[in-house]
Image 1 (cartoon, helix red, strand yellow):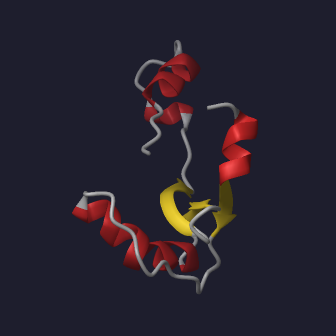
Image 2: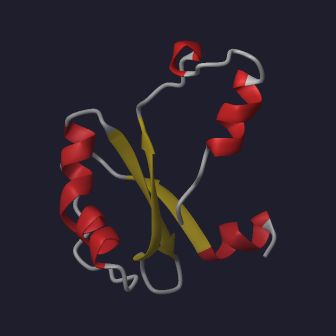
Length: 96
C-alpha cells in the first residue's frame, strides 16, 4: 500500500489527555488494556503520547495505535563507547 492509498483509507489521530478509546480488540489482552485504559494515564503523566489509526470508511473505527514514549539513549549507558550510535539504532524497535 502506498502512502497516498493509506491516506485515502486511514487517518492518524493524536489522542488528547482526556480522550479515551471505547472499543479495540487486536487479540492481545495487554495491548487492548493499554489503549482502552492506560494510554490516557501515560499522556497525563507525560510518559507517552498515543496515536490512533482510524479507518475512514467505518466512521473512525480504531484499527491500530502506536505510542511514542519519552526516554533517552545516553552514551554513559554503554560499556564501550565505540559504535554506540550504531548499536543504539540497531536495538530500536517499533511495535505495531
